[in-house]
Length: 595
Image 1 (cartoon, one colour):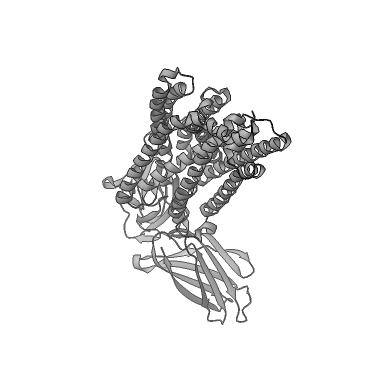
Image 2: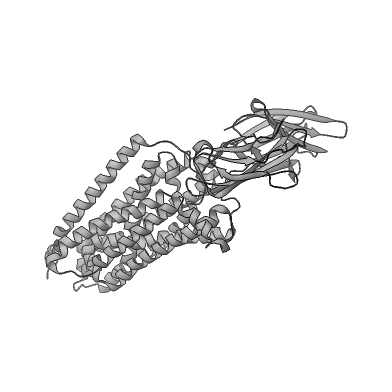
């Protein structure tokens, strides 16, 4: 065969599937239109909320002194919280419980939690500790204190810290389960590759095993997530994973319901997998497969939607749009990475150049579309969860997201290497023609072998990086979004009566737990060692405080505290006392705006 005839041969390789791909494209466009319609509705009707609940106020307020004991303690959060596996406990100065009855949502308000106190409580200090689960399924906990009558003033570090107090083994197992769930998702996504790009893969035993492995991992991870959510949310050890009470409580939450929906959808999808991954008689193949592929696509979207509906997406701003974006994002990941897995394990090792000539152009278009979708939805999600560029490097969530973005850029770059290798070997000819060219006698077979070898290494490396990115994502979804945790530090320099200065920094200057750094300088601007340093905080508008802050010496002329609690937003007064000697001291104050 002459070289001039080869382009037509390459085109003939693609012809049998061309007509069959039209219905598939029509179904894809129909699904895209459906998602776009929902997206439009979401843009109009989405209501703002916050991811990871924060404690907005307490009654009594932290640090307050009351004339008489209240009948109940009430906590109000920035969003609805679950109390199924949480608690609100109140203890007196001797550590004895003084709360009574169950924790409730007062007046049916989902964003509030209340517990009644015993009658006849006397003077003294009382500490309230709490643990609830925010709408994105992550636990938050903390403590605050109040005083009744002439009792001694007590304080507690009011913390709204995601995952606080969760058993370390449970945390590690949960992260592993999330990773397995994502791996199962992309392996199951190989079905998209088979349906759109590689029809012959339906009867390939290795491809079948990979897709079924994805289904098994997805089911197993969902069961594991249901069992682990109870101990994770309640702070119980891993030995309580089979607790009937925790399991019942989990199934009653949004997270538990979404996992149940996922399992039901995966069960129905298994029936379709049996039909889709088998050879059908020619007379009924096209119509039957078209129907089954449509049903599988709908069930796949249901499975994908359960991820966003039980995570950060449902709790953040624009929740409807965010869940849809998250669903489309995961669909693109499953399509792209699932195809890469089947390429590197089934097609490339077998040197099936005729099939590759037909499959790679289709997958190239599918992968290109997936990358575009990932860029658009990823940018939206980054804006939504981060909010401001400085938060990328100033929060744990932002730093992990930065690593994920870098990995994604590397993955896209590597994805282009295989195509470059083929095009360079064949002078810029289309990939389909170049690979069809490999199927025929060639004067330089070793060069052709090197092209395929380079392509195999490139795709295998892409799969490895994708696996690492999935592991990073499994950790990322357990972090508090940067938008909720980032704040601009307050920094000021105060002059002392002694002639020196003190530098005071409050980070992140947000409601909840903050870190305070305090440096003391002499009149020459050098760090000095005074006899003592003290700090008090007061919120005059709410009559809270003064609350003493325990400072720990962290270096020459340097003190800090990592547990300074600002229980409410407002203009707080910080009073610094620097004692130069037994008879000489200086006092300076500053106003800090806590958001």
